[in-house]
Length: 293
Image 1 (cartoon, one colour):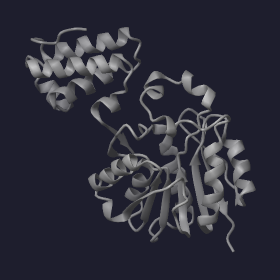
Image 2 (tube, rainbow, N blue to C red):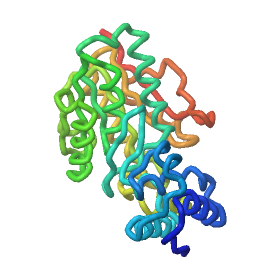
Image 3 (cartoon, one colour):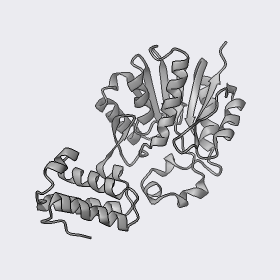
């Protein structure tokens, strides 16, 4: 491991980038910039303006620790303790997943459905089941000024993180967090239910990328033998809690959308629109509607 002591900020960043590239980390340059900035407490402008300043011993030690952790496979978001999602900066903890861009597809589809029904400005009641960091719920509340949101999670530690994120985003007055298994602690009706449940097949977990396998909470990944265990519990609960005409929108793993639609149909939900694909073209968000009376 390189000793960054005495190096300029620019030189240290370049050395770190080269180390990460050698380790076959695809985002080496971006990771090096983010980690250098975090170690020094500088944004991009600060890194540029102070490029020729030498690192202090404390800064060098922090950057060396960050480099060690990143080279061991720990994701940047875990190292710096936060991740951006839907324009919100979210605090992370060991009890929460790192929010991923794919999950924004769930937010997009939910908003499209509400917009089509002319419901964006209504006093909606929405639920995020298995909220984790609160990412999906807070993204929706940021777009729905009159909505009241509820987030559930079986993990008290996750709910503490989500609550802190709600406060940080200025949404605490409209967000309530409830400890329960999926939606078991809720009373409806609700105008929208969303969820990113665990959907990785148990046998596939050992083959996941190290930044997921080693650092995301196992309970938030493991979806059982076929990856669908969580949906079997969640979908019937959600169907019972939805208001007539309301929708459930869930994230799906690669190749799972058709099976999830079958489960929705079996629970009495209509799958009248196709799943929404993420940027990679994978059907990522699946919606089921409760029949209007």
